[in-house]
Structure formats: structure tokens, C-alpha cells
Image (cartoon, rainbow, N blue to C red; front, side, top):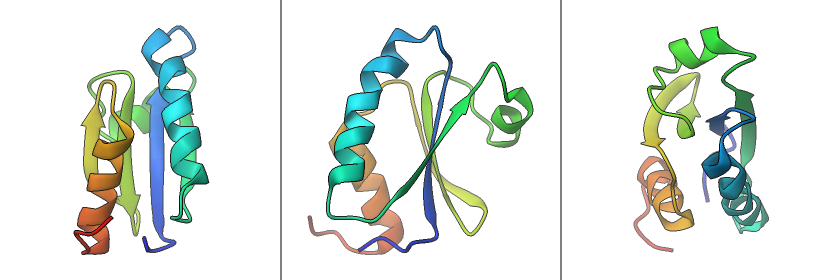
Length: 95
């Protein structure tokens, strides 16, 4: 199980069609067996946070633990890609 200190930060903007489509992936992730906090960041409203997270592509997912990013998934990400990145911080390779 993923440490509760992990936050999945989803950086998007209102006009991003890809970002809107990724909402269903995030919903499935949140309904999964892992307790996750997902923080949605509007890149237009919070440009300074986007810079601090070093996001170059919208949408992007940045995974943060203990206030430090440990994984970045630029562009459209699948549920499997997100779960793989989460497993890397959890230290387990199983499903």
C-alpha cells in the first residue's frame, strides 16, 4: 500500500481536452485499493506552483512524497503508468 504521504498532483488547465479525458483515469485511481490524495492544479490560476513543480507539458502528473517530487508523467497518462510510478515509491513490484 502506498504511504499516505504521497500526493498525486494533476496539473491541467480548463481548456485542455486531454486533461478532461484524464479525469476518468484519476477517478478510477481514487476508487482503487490505494488510499491516495489527488490534488488538481489549474496551471492558469497557479503558474508559480507549476514552475516549482517543473511542469513543462499540460496536462501532467507529478507525484510528491515528503514535499519532494519523485515522478513526473507529462501528457496523457494511463492508469497503468500512474500505478507503476506509485509502486516505485512503495517499493513493491506487485499489483
